[in-house]
Image (cartoon, rainbow over the protein chains, first blue to last red):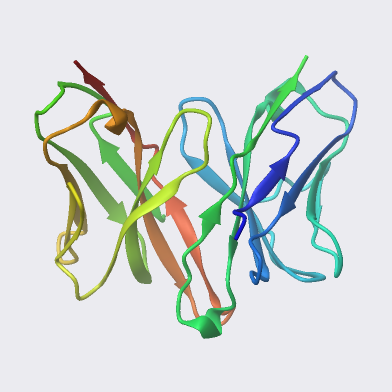
Length: 116
Length: 116
C-alpha cells in the first residue's frame, strides 16, 4: 500500500508565476489536509478537504491560494502569482474516514517550493 | 489561543545516552496528543498517540507521558542511536466534532542531534 505521494518534490518558480502542488492520498483515504512549514517553524494548517468539498480552509491565505480535491485524481494546491514569502515546504496528509475509528494523519514527503 | 510550545529548541547528545523533550500546550477542546518524528527532508511520522485518560505510552525506545491537568507532555528517548537525529514534534488534536474531524496544532519541534 503506497503512502501519501506528493509531486513535484522540489519546485522553483519566479515571482509572479503559478505553482501547482499535487497530492495523492493513501488508498482508501478520503480526507486530505495541506500544511505549510516555513524554515525553522512548525507546520501550519492550511486546508482540509474531502472529495469535491472544502471542509475547513481557515488556514488558507485569502488571496492567491486555492485547493481542490476532485472526484477523480489528486488533490491540488494552487498558488497564483507567487512571491518570495511563499517559499516553504508544503506537506499533504491523508486520513481514513472518521467512521474507521482513527483520525491518524499520514504525511507525504512534502514539496519544497522556492520562489526566486 | 491554541498553542503548543516545545523545549528545548535543539539538543545534542552522545550516542547511547537518554534524553527528554518537553511539550506544553494550551489547546481546547483537547482530543489527543501525538509525538511525531520528522527526518530532514521528509514528512512527519507518528510515534505515539495519547488520549485525555492516558498517562504514558511507549513505542520501542520512545516513551511519552501526558499530564492533562498541567497540560504538559514529555518524550523520553532511551539509549539513543544515530538514527534518532531528527526533529521531534508535539502535536495536539483540537476536537471538531461538528466537522467530524480533529484539527492538528503543531509545536515548532525540538531538533535532536545524536553524535557518535
